[in-house]
Image (cartoon, rainbow, N blue to C red; front, side, top):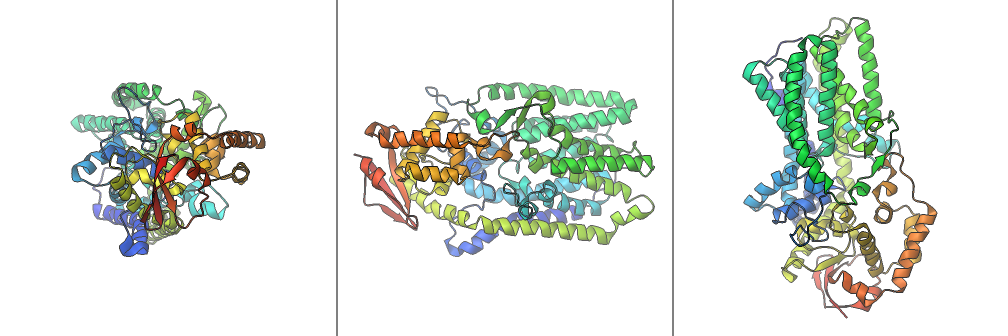
Length: 596
């Protein structure tokens, strides 16, 4: 055991500054590319961020917790909405929406501010954790940069995934995805810091740290499912390891666990009540799978197992002691991937386990590695090189370079989308002027624009890729909305068949669910068969052949947004709607629609 030492925070600020710079890169890249024409859009790097920013915008504008920003529906006494994962995981958006409303800041601006802030706080939290456990601020500096920059490398995704032919990889810093896990992630790391410090604490400090741990778990409970379940799993791993290695301290451990457990159980009661009222489509959208098959070949899991074997060998060779607090702490992190990826063996349920890989296990394994390096580096002999200033310097530099490469790559890859989103701000403002009531349904021909408009304004859209994640429509309504959108776009049944056969994930997801369109989302996902595709096309063909006025009136359109750079067959929409002269806004024309 090492004694607690003072943390040299100037090194932590150095690591935080490095991560803040990487977090700002995509936004700076967009602003520089747009120049004076930049209208204020945030630079997104993950496709799910548009759904989160749309929900945040609804809260900023005063909508209730249960809101669907895409369909425009929200919870009312006469027409209550079911719960969604957005409304259940409500603490982060409210944490952002309340100051945004008070200061008159838009959801887009909040997302711009959140990126560097989350990076700064996360880097400080990881630095503090490694510094506290190793007693070396220099190791913590290199470790904080490496842990946060090399996550995609450990998971085999990002740029390394692209080199290996991986199609569904993250190419940036996953912990920064807004607003989850970006908001709760620093608190998640802080939980580990407090649990470590509670090993040394006595009296009032011990009770305060235990209470803080319980409060963090409660916050994670209503913030992000994967961080919350990981926190509970890690606390279990931590407890088991300590009871086995240090059974003489069982009373203190049981007492603190009892306090945390009692608070967590109390918070879980309202959580599960909310979850029990979730939309019937939530499980299908979230790709919940019932299985008891083990999952043993995730990259971070394999690395964790390799590290556990190495620790066992070093203990046998007396290079490490199984009684050292740091060793036990590292082991608890290394056990975490094995637990979260195989919990379905006992629970029978698997829910998009790849999220653990992206947001939890890669960081846990890297944290364990640096804790072990700090321990081994203090041993006599060849391990001392691990604490060499030169080695630590190059670890930090190479890690930062890897993160910078990812930042550069995602900034270039997302540039076209970000420019479209920025140009759409003027479209949303024009729609606000044309229809201040926000009740008219908008149909943007460009699907990417349909995704982003609810982040800027309040108008519902006919259909959007992320519409199914909200509870405003049943599964049949979602399919119908999609068919209407395709029909109004002038897409023939043969053209739809061609699109489906091409493997377009957005269209496949609209008709068969995300777990069928993207097999990486769930274990044992069943690919969409040709027969299913042809059946769906036949259903669309029947609708398009017998489309009547009652269909057009069901989702009554108020506006059509046409991208002047895109070809458009207006025959179907002109058959049922009259278009006005149109309002030209940059590259777009907004047509007011009136049913014939």
